[in-house]
Structures are given as C-alpha cells and as structure tokens.
Amino acid sequence: MLTNRSKQVVKKEMTIMEKAYLPAIFSGMLITFKHIFMKKATVRYPEQVREFAPVYRGQHVLKRDEAGAERCTACGLCAVACPAEAITMVADERKKGEENLYREEKYASTYEINMLRCIFCGLCEEACPKEAIFLTDRIVPSTFERNEFVYGKDKLVEPIDQRVDVTKRQTPAVLEFKKDKKHKHNRTFLDKVLKPSNKH
Ligand code: SF4
Ligand code: SF4
Image 1: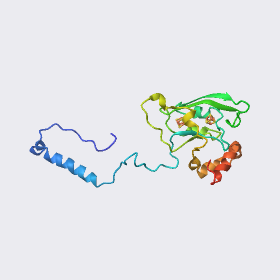
Image 2: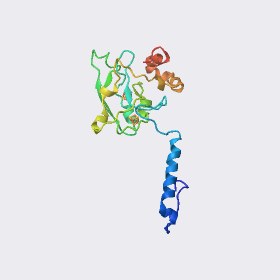
Image 3: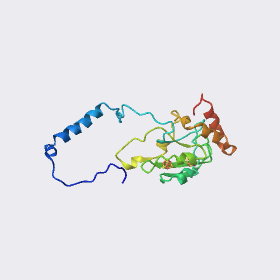
C-alpha cells in the first residue's frame, strides 16, 4: 500500500441522496471552485519559462579552447562512463596544418550522442579529462523522427562565434578540485574561467 488513502469498496444499495447524484456533483464543483483561487502548479510554457537551477543538466556542448580548436581528444572516457551507452565516436589523427582545428594530436572525427538514450546524468562531463564536454541549460527540442535525436558534431560542437557559457557550472568546489596539479593539462582553460572578464 503506497498511501493510507485507500478505501474498502462495499457493494450496497444506493441511498436516495446518492441516487439523486446532485450532492456528488456539487461537491465536485466545489473542489473545482476552490482550485480557481489556489496558486497554479503549472505555467504557460513556452511563453513562460521556469527558472532553471544553475547546474541544470540539458543538451551537451563540445567545447573549443581559447583559440577555437576542439578540445575533445577522442579518448572515449565519456562513452565508457555513460550508463546509457548513448555516446559513440570515431577517433582520428590530427594531420599537419590542422593544429588550429584540433587541440590534441587525436580528435573525434565522428562524435554522436543519442538524446533518446541519454538520461542527462552528467557522468560524461565528470569523466572528461579535457573539459571538452559539458551539459548546459538548453533543452533538447522535440521532434517526430527518432533519428533526429542522434546529435552529431554539427549540433554538439559550439560554433566558434557563438560560444556556450559553461562558467555557471564551475562551482567553487569544482574549481578547487581542478587546482590539483594532476589536472595541469586544463590550466589554460581554468585560468580563463577564473578571469570573470573572459567567460570562454
Ligand atoms: S549525460 Fe549521462 S546518459 Fe547522457 S550522454 Fe552523458 S553520461 Fe551518457
Ligand atoms: S569528450 Fe572528453 S572524455 Fe569524451 S572523448 Fe572527448 S576528451 Fe574524451
């Protein structure tokens, strides 16, 4: 029994009042009337949007570094950490002359997240050693086609001229953790984050 509100159903003759149905109708209308003056539990979405928590976990972003190169090195740790097996990728080697495109010698030529499988747990973000993937406060838009929920790099990598701000997700505890010398490879980004004038 989940609640103590269950009632024993008894099959008995209806009284005259019950047969008239009017008291039951009025009592139902009274309940409806009372709710008119109560605080509404719903909002008129999408005209009205509720305030999100600063660490709300929505659509992912694959970040670029300060120079605009993709941070992801296709190490696969996010895919291993993902409990929903929503992430797949193909690793490739960076060629000479592509240093401005990819930060590391290895990069993801294909990177896909199946948003229907994803449970937005954030473990991929936690597992990433390169601060390449973050969840954001963006909502994955609905659509009627299942295959449109498989997001590739075209939807995941942030546009170079429209950076996605993830500084809100860098809580003081996270920043403290990243000061550890073991995470030195992320220093450049960390230094940027600590400067409030430059959020990317
Ligand atoms: S948020 Fe969780 S379920 Fe979604 S891709 Fe990342 S690890 Fe997988
Ligand atoms: S997003 Fe991070 S964890 Fe995932 S493959 Fe790229 S570098 Fe590795």
